[in-house]
Image 1 (tube, rainbow, N blue to C red):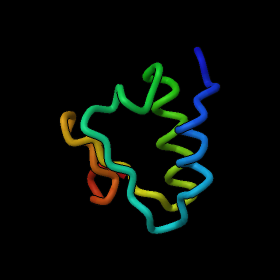
Image 2: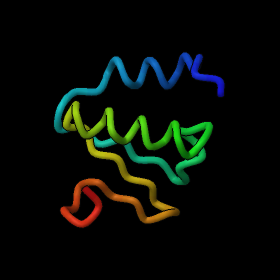
Image 3: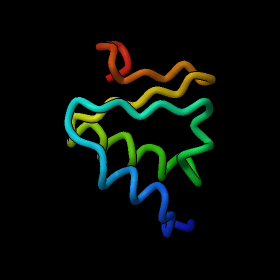
Length: 65
């Protein structure tokens, strides 16, 4: 799995607690489902919300957390 993703790394450096990361499809941010799970876990720890419009994933709701 390729984790060297400069633009994603820049995004992650820029985000702060309370920010939301919104993507159209989750395949735009992940290389594998396991990596997506790692990202979402990191977002939760950092209090960053994740929304994927196509898959209807929204960690801003209690149901998705």
